[in-house]
Image (cartoon, rainbow, N blue to C red; front, side, top):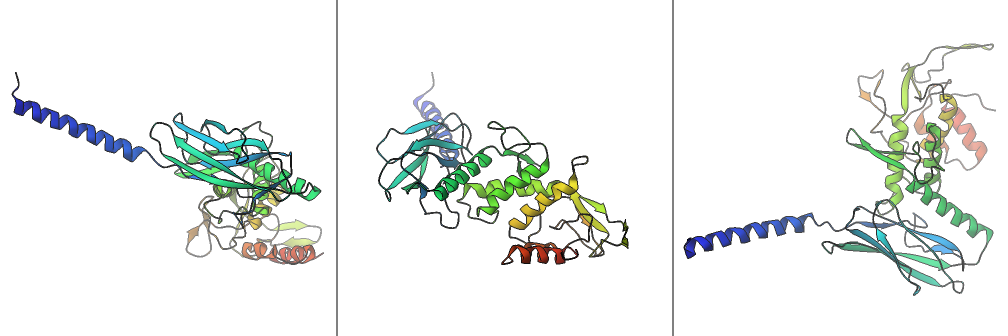
Length: 332
């Protein structure tokens, strides 16, 4: 038989092992990061507008998912809560219709909890009853539409870089298509509504936009810029003289036509001086190798800084003429 000293030592070791396991388990229990989709990204505390009786979607995300993670939407109007397992951390949604007098504000709350360890976090999303107008109907439709684009984005990682696009059929595939320009159009929808890659990290759509922008530039390829011949004569379209152009790398799928949608999304980013982290590396005339935001179609290579800034013109005619100048095109 072991003496009492040996038994004591064994017991101490076992307790030490148990304590270590407990510390590891505690360290592994991460507090979730919960985010709520803002009605207005420029004013994240502004309530989501709706009208009495309208069915809307409450929208949130988490950085955790799996069998032990549960979400609960408390609608804040006394009705029963909605809950489920967090199966898709990018999509934590519940539909609900609010009733009340115009001006009534409800505080809905999204809570995400690890049922195994008790780790939990929550965020409040305010909803305000407004008069039913055509403008409100349109804003609700855009809000719901952006949520669908967000949840149906195909997300993946390659080479340590995160990407996202709409080339895969997810959640019905209503916004997906294999043509790259469709992803550019979807990306532009977020940007046009103020959700930019430089936005607040509290906005769930910022990551969606960042992923899509990386995909956009990964789909561009460098080409040589030859002289162009037409009935008016022979012209050199290489405006900056570096001998390089860029176009959508999807042969047989109208890359020049798709370029227009790519251009729209790039301009809408509002970041004319940002250097890309994805895309083809180009050998420039200067002794540097870099990948940057520029564009080429069968016309002089434009100055993308000028093209992007042109989007800030006060009128459509001003914008068009500024872009024509930046791209070296004749004015109409």
